[in-house]
Amino acid sequence: MDWKERIRDPKMECASLDEIRTLQGKKLVDLVNRVYGVVPFYTRKMKELGVEPGDIRGIEDITKLPYTTKEDLRDNYPFGLVAVPEKDIARVQGSSGTTGKLTIAAYSKNDVDLWAECVARCLTMAGLTNEDRIHVCYGYGLFTGGMGLDEGARALGATAIPMSAGNTQRQMMCMEDFGATAFACTPSYALHLAESMAEAGVVDRLKIKAGIHGAEPWTEEMRKKIESILHINCFDIYGLCEVLGPGVAQDCIHHKGLHIHHDHFFPEILNPADQSQCAEGELGELTFTTLSKEAMPLIRYRTKDLTSISYGTCDCGRTLPRISKFKGRTDDMKVIRGVNVFPTQVETALLKMGGEVAPHYMLIVDRENNMDTLTVMVEVDERFFSDEIRQLDALKKKIGAVLKQALGISVIVKLVEPKTIERSEGKAKRVIDRRNLV
Amino acid sequence: MTIKQLSVFLENRSGRMDEVLNVLGNNGVNIVALSLADTSDYGMLRMIVSDPQKGRDVLKENGITAMITEVVALRVPHATGSLAKAMHEIVEGGVNVEYMYAFANGADASAVIKSDDPQKVVELLKASGFDVWEENEAYHANVIDK
Image (cartoon, rainbow over all chains, first blue to last red; front, side, top):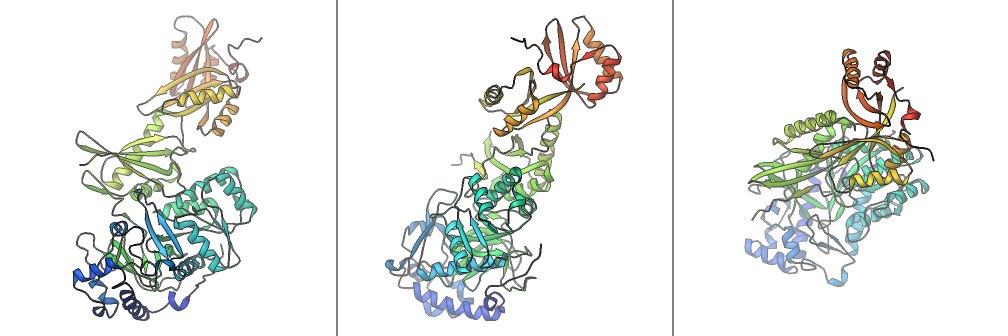
């Protein structure tokens, strides 16, 4: 496929690190002055640490500032962290997360524009222009996926098709009838749609050239699978509602990590053990300070997403730092028999087996006789399905061996019928932990 | 002279078998012979039906994974040792039998044989005087016309 690299805001996206550091410093000083004495939470936290706004003179002073955690957001639910008069809140978005409790974020009118601009940068990074039609099958509502992509399409001047999630038959029909050139949804739903379209034989009639997928972790193998079914380029868009929503970062056509818009979001990678700053390339917890947001700015927000960062100019020309694909979340990680297990490791291992198994799986962690057990439910690919028990058992053994190699612990493999594991239209729940730990 | 068998992967969940049989029944697919193999976490339902292709299609439409396998249906006369003789021919011919199951057939019995070389099984059996079912007969075995 022909590729022409487009950069929406070269002044920011290709700036030197020195220029950006100066800008970030100015914005940080301004941010501290905007929250201190206005947001009781930050005022108290800073006083506890003995820091005053005058102590913050440049971006390097950020380490003097307090952290913000998800628990802090819940404690201040809903508008306790808002730094503008409540009448200036233009929009509220929220996330139920995978744990059920609501986390919300407030946006001023400028924040909504900032969000739209960040998503427009991402859409441009995905090769889209004002001539494109973007089929948005993320959910619309409190969840940021639908609104975020919609606003981004508006800022880009493209056409937004607000499908929202669900009803795969109708999605396929509209995608074809409206001549969509790109679609946006979670990667697990993208794979489900791709499989459904391949099955219905409509792939050749589509005009889709790009897929924008995020809101749950996915792997290179999964990207390649969607790309090969639909003959398109897929991009990993990242964001979280507390910080902005989708558009905080995205990978470019070279897929060498997700470019962070660090003129608006200052990233730090913290060592999970002692919160010290990780070196370039070192795995740690991603932490963001929102430099530009007005309504609900966050200082050193701990995302719980594990990644590493790298600086330097990318092949696409951008100098925006890149974060690696997420290695998991500090809270998705399961400690099973003392070994750290991330669901993404299972996905990577299964996809590496080629076409034998579908990349749909579910992990069940349980405890029997004081021993942790990990059961992996794997769908048997229709093409590989055999009516000979000997062959299915051999497949089961092979999956068991591959997973043991990848995870370092032995697992119980359970084969299930194709298409029986739920395809998510929101965030896929890949792990069920039945251990009742007191 | 081989016939087509319909195989269905069944998860060990209550009501799964019921679903499969209902789909076939509601679509007029008659089951002539059946075998159910079970393991600790799944089962394999293998059937000779009146229309294997239609059976597979209607199951697929209902989200049930089914596949068609080539098998041989041997007619076994009710005479002591006849099955032993037939199987001996297959073994001597160097064909590996994966599984088999029987079904009644009026005065005679029949055995469905899944092997790694169905065509050769037919040749071996015919050469030693055994008869095998043809597709059209097998799919309607034991069905008495009204």
